[in-house]
Length: 345
Image 1 (cartoon, helix red, strand yellow):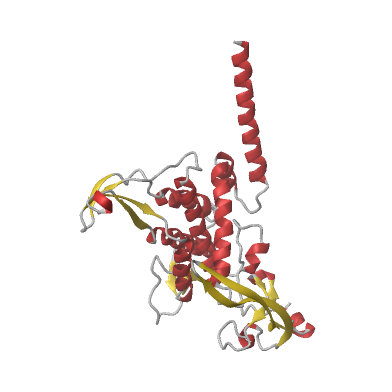
Image 2 (image 1 turned 180 degrees about the vertical axis):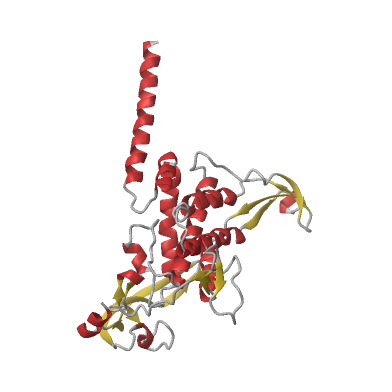
């Protein structure tokens, strides 16, 4: 009896430390509202998955805007990733809320399928037989439980906006939803054949997440076609700002304010400016020196780069290359003149 009591005491001690650890972690995440903090304390395993999802969506955002004046770099420096990242209600803010919401859904769904979350496992609805025109198949394996990811992401992320009933909160809730549903749009059916010598007379199928890049590409297209809106008179929703345009659907990103030019540093707008950014001297696009540097000009530095050259295919099956050194010119945007910067601030 004494040994058993000692074991139980040890067990509760571990649980207590776990709960205390979760409390310390959750109290130190900046930008959480009370409901988010409570969810964090109850589900520390989920918060770990959300943390991984945050890294993923910031990487995706930076990939999508790598050739633009605004390139999501402010997000790396803003540790309140669950807070209001961009203060201006621009189309960039709309994209950030959508992609961050999608990132949380994606990370939770993946963690769920990998058995990393206590309260979640494979999609329980994907069971039994079905037919897809190619024949009968069994639902089996482990279908990614995207509905669980969507449900928890909605509870957690939307908690930030729920107590506030202003236009920006409504805008954020709308764009959050666009991001969540985007992940579900790219679920794939994957199958394994069980017939004689690999024939598909019998198949086991399951639904799986696609690569997150597909969601990023889709939301980037939605960013390009984002709809400028104004609040309804009763303050319950939006109407399109320009009556000549079609009204926003539930899958459109929406925004209230025009974007700044992002040429100069402006913390309130989420802009670091483009001073020091690498630009492409020969491009006429957004990555070209003229556009990227906002007409301020650029500096050119010659650097030595090592590249693979004189590559030969060797039988079988390797490619052997030499390391060659070559001089390349790197072009970077000039900083604004002090007077220009002071005018902005």
